[in-house]
Length: 348
Image (cartoon, rainbow, N blue to C red; front, side):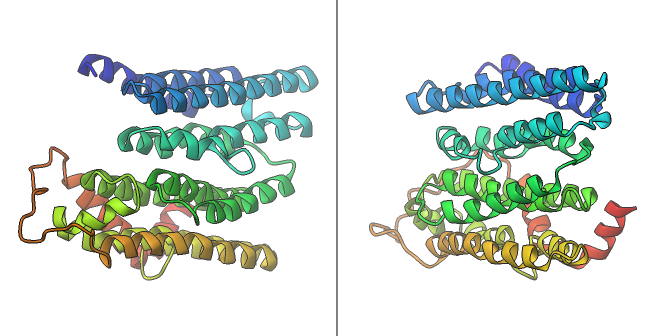
């Protein structure tokens, strides 16, 4: 892609998200979401492959549906209450509609089925943007909403943690596994968003760092399915030895960074006298942990059938910058001891 066009599209992505961040009026927020969607579509379709075009079409239809729902709900709210302000949503009908529209935008279960299919049709770089940056604007609106219907958010969160764990069990494609991982993590955030918005923000940032590391490791190895991970020893031995720690951090095992948000969310749910909900969420995390362990096993404990260790024809120079991967990997693995400082920073 022409670098000038790429710069314009990336600027459009940033502008759309910034407009949504800065808006207190529903029409402005909707406009930011639309700019965001229109900027990423050429990035998704840049490889003229039927899978990429199909993924782009599915993404466009899904996002257009969610945006139409959001616009309809905000207009209904203005008609019922005379308010266009995001923080003045008082009527339960538009609040429920907007919650469902935003859930469709970010891929919460049961409105999740587009996300694995779309991510599977994209390259890893665009998939990374879709899994991280594209979640920011809808979450900014989620955090500003005053939830009139707490049980709806709990149902969406529980369904997402369950389906995010269950859906990834039988997958062999890495991008689909990462999509189900995204659904599960978003479910954890949705569970706690009404009790502690600052904790949701912390979980979102932690998820971004861990997902960034995972996508970069797969991109470094040019891996798209589980079997292709087996030759990563010959390509990048050091990154391969660190990859299981990144994956287990995504799964939420101590003493890695990914344990911190899950631990704090379970603690918050228990404080809110929801022990059954906390227990169920912790059990669904085991489902996700299984497929992270599968990926770790495929990367580090298996060898590719025709791997000639004497001649390693894969050690070509890679144009990928390794410094961002090094920084994000350190953050993914080593931040758990800083939990008190991080929670003080986010709750102050």
